[in-house]
Length: 85
Image (cartoon, rainbow, N blue to C red):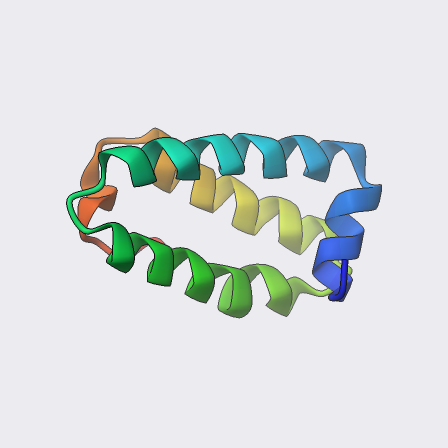
């Protein structure tokens, strides 16, 4: 982990589980995406602008992970939408 947010996720068991769920959701969405490149870009922006902005704030990280999980675990709007970033 090179960023504070990454390290915090690694060392907090609950956040690590959320991270695993998010990784699964992202992989599934990517496999079904009409615009895979747009989804990759969206995920990179989320990591940079949302997750990393939390730094080591576990409450912030929990909140942004839960929001992003709703994005992937909801209806298949992820095929070309960035609104959940």
